[in-house]
Length: 68
Image (cartoon, rainbow, N blue to C red):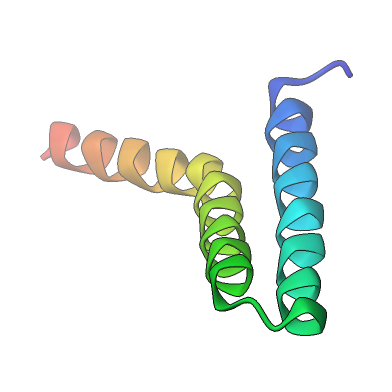
């Protein structure tokens, strides 16, 4: 991996894979706790994947406010 964004995307992919496995295990085992954990991991993966975009948006807002 050559770029830091690749680490973020790799971590997100691993988190999504774990979330899918847990969610499907919860469905087949009829355990609501596993389904809930799977959903929270998917939400966390989405949040981690959104961090670079949020960083760019905040920095552009700061730059725009600084130039005024």
